[in-house]
Image 1 (cartoon, rainbow, N blue to C red):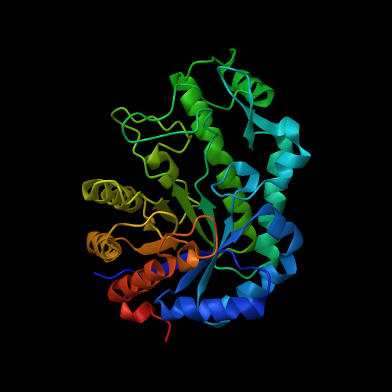
Image 2: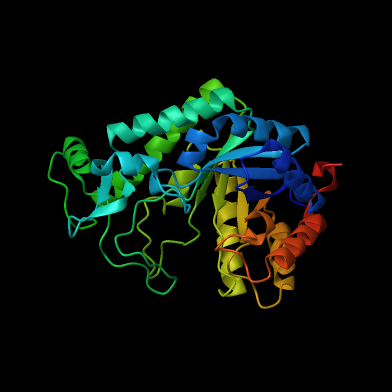
Length: 348
C-alpha cells in the first residue's frame, strides 16, 4: 500500500523566482504537494505574488493548497491577526472570568463577513487545488492540554454575540458551565462557518478540495480539549469537506498513540467517504533517532493513510521553531516520502 500525496507547508510567498527553487527542492525530496501558509498580512500585502507563487508550484507539477494560517487566531499558526488588531471588541470571552481572549469570536457578523471575503477572493483569483482548514478551534482560557489531564474547566466563547445566539436557539440564558446544550451549540456553530466558507469556495471553484484538519487528541478518558471540533464524526460527515485530517503528534508520545490516532482518523474518513490525512512534526522537536521519522511514515502508509504532510519546509530552518537538526530532519523526511509515495503519483 502506498500513499497518494506527500507534502510540506511553506512560508516563502514573497518572490516567485525564489519559491521556484524551493519547490524544486521539495520535489527532489519526494513531495508532490505544498500547503501555502497565508497569514492575514500575506493576503493583504503580498496577494499578487500569492497568485504567481501558486502558478509556479502548479507549473512544476505540485498540488497547491491554501492555508488560512492563524486567521483571527481561530486557525492554528503563529502570525498575529490584523482583524483582532482592528476589531478588539470581537474577541472570544472566557465563560468563568469574562476575560477577553486573544482570539476572534467567529460567530460575530464582522468576522464572518471578513473571513468569507478572504475565501472568495482567494477562490476567484488564485488557481489553487484546494483549501486547508488548519486546526480551527475555540480559544482555551487555560493554555495547556495533555493526554493525561487536559485544560481546566473554563471555556470560550461566552461573549454577548454567543449569549444572544444561544438564547435565540435554546430559549434560555447561556450557562457558565459546559452543559450538553452548550457543547452542541459550540460544535454546531464552529462547523457552520467552515461549511459556509467551503460552499462559497466550491460555488466559485467546484473542483477545490477542502481539507479539514482537527487536533489529534481523542476526547475520551480524562482528556477534555473543549476546542469545538472534538466530535470527529460530526466534522467528517460535512458534505463540503473532502479530506479528514488530524494533526501532528509529539515524538515523545508512545508509538501506540500514533497508531491509535491514525486508525481512528482512517476509520472516520472511510465512514463518511473522505480521504484520510496524517501529519508529521518537521520543526522544533525531533526524535532522538531521526530514523524514527521513517518508521512513522511507514506506519501511516501501512495503515492505509491517503495523504501525508509535514510542518514545515526544511524543518523550519532559519526560524525560531527550527528543529535542532533541521536540514538533516528534512532530508530524512524526503527519504521517507520516497519509500512510500506511489510511483504513479510522483512528479517526474
